[in-house]
Amino acid sequence: MELKTKVIAEDGKQELTIEREFDLPASLVYKAHTEPELIEQWMGNKVIQFEKRNHGSYVLETKSPEGVVLFRANGVLLNLIEDKSFVRTFEMENTGFPIQLEFFTFETITENKSKLTMQIVFKSVEQRDQLLKMPFAQGINMAHNRLETITKQTLA
Image (cartoon, rainbow, N blue to C red; front, side, top):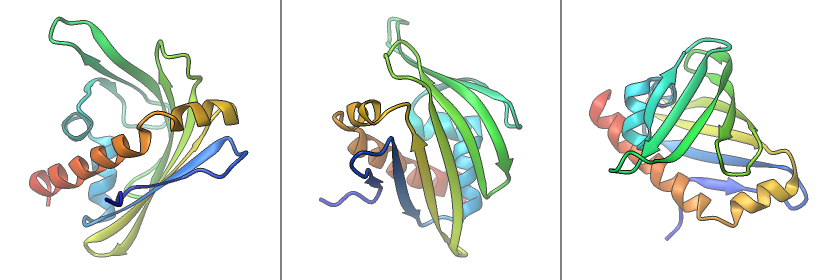
């Protein structure tokens, strides 16, 4: 089955591009990325901190039922342009992956259709390729499917 979310990784480059068209307005896809309540629903992570402002920080976390931290990520938001774009740093704690730089763009296609483009820059080609060896494309596609379903139910 073809994935709706496309992951584009050119050989020898330390970046990748993620593209997804949503049956939602760009403003709602932007909100799904910048409103803590929505982030928790589609990503499945608890939002510990989220400062929606330039130079604001965020912390996301997932714990086991026993309270053990399974995943923790943090970073800083930059250049927020409401409903259009933002940049963030992204660090997965205790994984060995260095900090990534992520550029998000939200484009209007029609009144109820939009395109999300994420450009992720890694420290090295090797770091990017290590991530791509994991089921990354399938995981982000599943998350984007949830984003679309939950956002339609919650905000549309």
